[in-house]
Image (cartoon, rainbow, N blue to C red; front, side, top):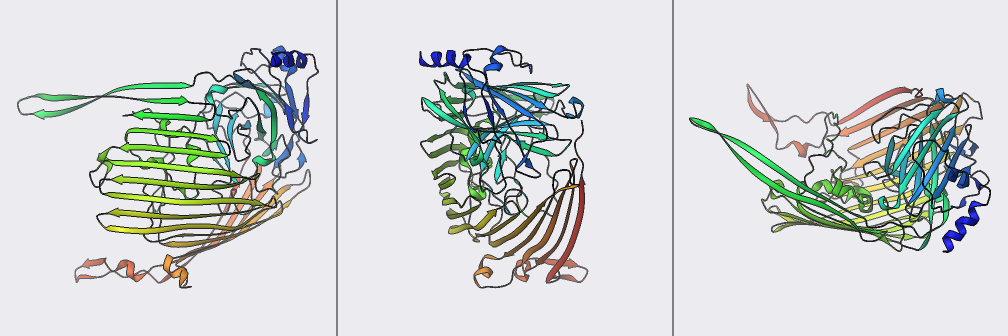
Length: 603
């Protein structure tokens, strides 16, 4: 009864406006028992009573300035869904809007609106739901502080975002948009059934709205996000007081039936064909708003899209391919660890599997068990996997995590246990560490290994940033359930960034330079203070020009030393008979340089 009374009172109030630039970031989101048609036309009466988000700021290329184009976001919720309406005004008119009928997730070259919906309000992870002006969708998971790298955007002092964005997960939501004479309008409806959120009766959600304008190269945000912060999501606003959300029964059952037919020739007779039927299926059950159980038996993944081709030159290590199989994709972000200790594509063709993912209080919990097909086992035994990932929230943005993986194949096994932490301090600094041990047994014997990773410092400042990190992997380290393609090395990453910003209307809107040093030692050589055997010294310049143009330039010097011991087993055979392999030059010094120009995406 109380929500109905509140809704009636709200319906008589004038529309509430919340200006990001005026720091009006706590939105009292209204709840209405109303229906709308998702057609890209904001003409229903309920839109006049929605909360209105205005006052956007520029984030890229220069943060802290008022946005040049006006954006208005309307938001309210039904008992079963949250609904957004966006009016994106373009001062050059609708002809300047870039909108294409692109494939799902392939809208980065279009104008777009991106919603970051932090349904647990933990300021660490958010649903990313984006649409272009025609309503074509892109969705995935935005994770703050995951895979924070050295140069380029995720590290080195925060050139852009200190986050990973995984667009492989797909969520079910409605969207429709249209280009108008003044810009474009979009409607989005997100059913509570298709997402996860807190189990509390009344709850708050984090919200950030981003707008990308292609013809200018600008990126705007509703809350004034600044570069001088080690966390992007902590700068988001809040939707206050969502209550009595109706999720209903969340259960998807996908039965599958397949048949494999093999033909064999027979002398003097027609081919003999034999059929092998297969029955399987996948179950997804939302036990509660924040905990989901998935189970599968003999699943068929033939409908999954093919991997994108990768062009390699003299590649020495395994290639990484993202997960695309639906059973593994659901809740995959819960298994994130530094250095990819968990990589579900190690499970080639599961005969059966089950997983439990969710968040209980301030702890993320993810468990996976699977039995793989023995056709992919070098020992001929059935591989059995057990994977556990726990991550606890600490303070406003820090975390403490643990990962355990166990792969058993008959008498052989590989077990990995690791702990990791990420600490944000003084808002613009973070440090992180990971320590991992592995224990393996197979035909080669029993062995142990270690992996460690320490980010000593990472400063995310507006004008100046830096990053210092050491990673070491011992020769006998193995991650049978993960993706660690290289062992027997210690690598250092030292980067410094300096950025300058032009004033409004200046031809150069941003100039950034990175100076980086990345030496790499053999694991034992590092502790003996020996010289590195690989490395790079580089400097990169990034120039953002007015109108969406960009120039990038890089100069680097690489070195590579070849160890004679690595070539003892090789020999060359010619007319004179076999002879030892000649180790190529002791040391290479290779200079390289490149210059590139990026153009704006015009309508």
